[in-house]
Length: 330
Ligand code: TXA
Ligand code: MG
Image 1 (cartoon, rainbow, N blue to C red):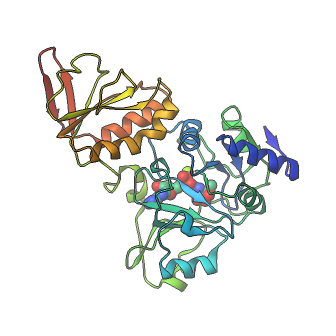
Image 2 (tube, rainbow, N blue to C red):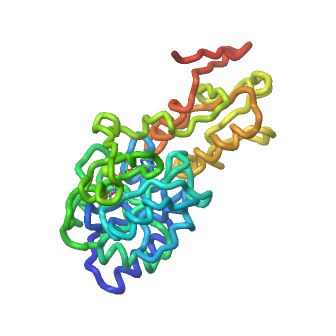
């Protein structure tokens, strides 16, 4: 549903966001598929709506007067200067995240991408909502980024609460992404803010080439548990006979096995996605010798969860009725 912009529709949009739903939101670069950036379930809905086969870290969008220190632990000097000059605008900064930012937003990375969009509608929604909005481009996985409300509606109309019609995007190209934690500063994605504009403030830049940023989800700094994790088919047997010192990660809760973990209570893939990264972290801190995780159903969000589990795993495991057979992946 495409809605024209007025006080009532802005309020409706904010109410939808407060309920954890997603909306199509205009920005100056491209339309975003926006949801409550501090609510893991809302973030899981974004991935579900996009039909992504993997999780990718998302950008948190903030209002012009938002206190960044609510979501990041520090803002380096060079970032402060960039913000002063180019926010609101098509510049995304990678900054060290605070605990309140869900792991699902950052794919478990210790940093979070933040930007302040230069679009009146986005700013009105952000101001009224009062919290950051996670928003990837509002297209289905593998499709083009949308620059009009109609383009969003065409692909996502039955997957989101509404699309606010903020007209055609002024820039039509995604924001430039900059990591200010290194020297020289690294440009992770070329975008609507020029390199020259960045150089004015940062001096020398290191531009990461296209081939390296095609799938940031593959970067090795993505969170993987320190504890060896083995993936297996649905676990129904052998629970009492699990390898010594191991902990199990079930898809849905099975009985009361103390010390084992599950991704959700009863089969809800959205809940499982929302819990995935924190469960891996908890398992890692539980002092186990190994983690045995079962695949989740390979449909919808389940594909992204399985993809993440595979990336986190050191091998596969199977139960042959007598013992566990663990095969390390090469
Ligand atoms: O213009 C834009 O930036 C648009 C509008 C909607 O704001 N958004 C957008 O989001 O392009 P998306 O999700 O399509 O792209 C976000 C990019 C991804 O390539 C992701 O890997 C990168 O940001 N990213 C997010 N968090 C990161 C982090 N902590 N470190 C490195 N890269 C990160
Ligand atoms: Mg995109």
